[in-house]
Image (cartoon, rainbow, N blue to C red; front, side, top):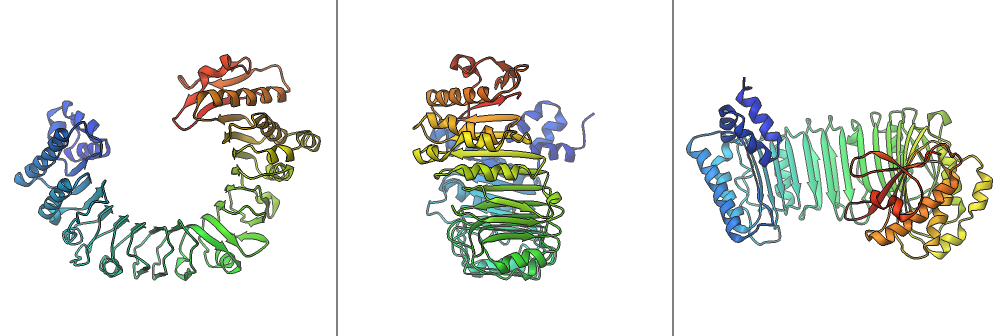
Length: 502
């Protein structure tokens, strides 16, 4: 027995268009549901076999919408990903006809640099039922009638919009729950006020806003502010007291900021910081509610990190330097720590000494190392000294991923793996080499031989993952003929997954 039409249409709306269309063969009910589905998606791509095929698809889109209008079939959501001025112009006519009944509208112009302006009057006056509006790569004019008073979700990506229009939109749509503004030109000032239902606010920009004001948003749970160039300018965070997740990219850490984290955000559970500068010798993060912490550093300068967060369960750290980490009290160290370290600058044994200290903190680590070989890097790594200092390497590293960025000084690759394995004995190792197979093969051969030398047990051979069947198989030696069939290629890197079985 067939399910209700509404349920069938819900299932079809969640499937890719091609797969949803194939459901028509299941029964007449499924076929009828597909022909009257209230969710229309037209995803026109930039790549077509010919202009004739492109024209055929445009005619298909026009015929489909005309059929819905002629037969008075409801259209609740309109998802348009269009290429070319003619298709966008046609889309405007469709929106004008069906706008009054729409609940969701998404418009994505693929060729956003064309001079054609999609008249937005119908977009922002779509009627009282519109709840979701997403516009990508569309210029927006200023002469608007804003009438979408039921709007809950607003997303603007690469949209040219004036501050007057944005302010009018925010002040009119007082039921907004989610706002995302990404890389929109024309906005130097953002004012989000009197939105008592707002739960998520995401802002992304190349240049920081001159003015950012957030007031009277008592239910705001998630706030994201990412700046691609320069740093975030000071803004009042007094209205963020209800936030449980805070993500800031391009922030300068000072005493006032750390005090805000400590005393002004009592419900904060997730904190993500991309730090470009700081004004102190020690980064002291205190939060009694914090559960997940992510830190990204852009500077190649040493700093001590001290964290007091008794509920912390997860730490992600990314940077050029292995900073000293201290959790107070020591028993509060998170059980899950992920490190992503970029050894692209000359380093010395202190890098590995601090790594070993950090490995004493937690029960499980995942470590990702990206490095480029240089003479100074090789000369400053004293593997013998590390082995003397750490006769018993740490065994709590679950996954070690190693990326190499240089074909020069090939012998230095083995020194890097020797130093890493002097510090830890990971359960799984993934090696990422050059996108050229020959150079990756040379890198893998050196690395595998280095791992085999470190093995202390002859009871189990090293295992390698077969990318074809996802099974682990015995790797008998480090020669190319042994591991070559197991090299996987994703177009960017050749990779090899290993289980050393120490």
